[in-house]
Length: 164
Image (tube, rainbow, N blue to C red):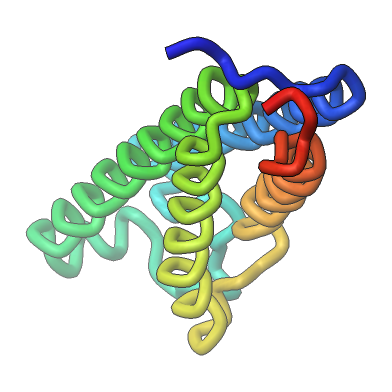
């Protein structure tokens, strides 16, 4: 399917927005890589989570219950995979779909991001896990993503555009 034709001024906003959205997706891939790496190091706990939030480390958890340690480790591995996959999906949708003005790609990227945030973020707060070191990188990626969303949206062709 050919790319949607967009007036030049809107095209530059669309490209800038899709670039920001793509960068945010790639930032999530980086976050996932750090998340995965920490699982296999002495740190074991997630980025930005320390003794102030969790009073036991890798050795204590493993000594208490090797099965629990392996269970937590498998959750870290699985979650890092889903974070990386989501980041790659956002980057791909943004670079190849949003950049062309494809509304389905734009809507899918926004919905995927919102669903992930609505499900994942609230659980951090009741137990004091919403530290700046833990969620700060995610918040930064989300700010970049939604700045890109705003720019891309303002650059999308509307039905009233004369180039329709």
